[in-house]
Length: 475
Image (cartoon, rainbow, N blue to C red; front, side, top):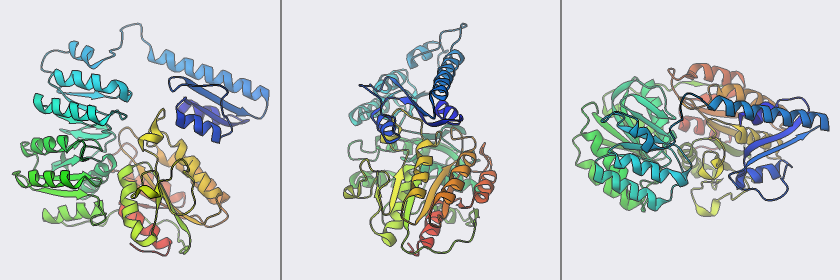
């Protein structure tokens, strides 16, 4: 994706896509007018360029070849053969070291690597998605038998004994342990806790399917037990999208038996607000609830009759927005809808109220997560501006390890261009998730996004309510 951006910035190049030839990327190429001839498989690299003339095209092709060759050279080494498997890595280590393994390979290969780690007595974080649910269950049962923990599959966020893994924020150590079936939900909660002066002991991600009927909360129950036995953990907060009712009941019953108090931050129509869950926890701890940081942005007149366009990188944050907004706005279409009949299908630029999760598995096959590469979302911003519907644009920007080192730098020109291109006022509201300690710095990013004309909030629920106010609605 970096190659695509670099080549696309060359004079005379009007469109470029360098990506794996997955069905999604082939569809994207077709939408861009770059449909390839012949068949292509997901294992092949797709290089598609449109330029003003043949000379520019030839130079762009040469630049792509040079960039790819440079990347290949930079990853090679004559000194040692890189380790290719978990098993090889464990064989190369002294006994009783590396208590945790991380697996980040295509889903079809992840199960074998995770199984090797479990067999060696290691807990494992499976960053990979695309793992069949029956394999997830088998891994978690094997881990329980071995006395270790499986975080994932599709676990993007964890903090273990102060060490951040995957997408995680720089937060202070403290007494609150999180069990999270939600990556961005955990980031929102841990960041708000840090802003309130409260730290976390561990954030144990369990994967988005763990609380489904099929998986039965296997990792959640094991993670709760682990935190209950941890002397640094005094309170536990469970973070999740809506779980299966029977699994929620089993987890609640298990939580009631623990020695540490367990509070729920599980999204549902009745409890749609993660920030409210943090505030309730602070109250339980006898602490004051702070005023969450924000940047108001320019004065914006309300736009009754306009539509909400939510363009999210975090699935839980997208769900939270839909749960908060649906009572006021009615039906909201999405690629991850609250109701099956509201599924967008392949039409991500449909009319009406829309919330898109660009981090959904279907949109990340063969491409980097939108917290790393914002290309698809930037294209969606331009599409909203070019549309015929007055709209309020609602985005999340997630900071921390693993994320874009300067997301405001990519968003600022896109937002400026969108405002200039739109034939109607285009208010922009941003939920900025992170802390001052993050590499990007919350205040630095907030100031830059505010200067670009956006209203910025540390709380996604506050950002959503502000967007609803601009739409002349209320939750």
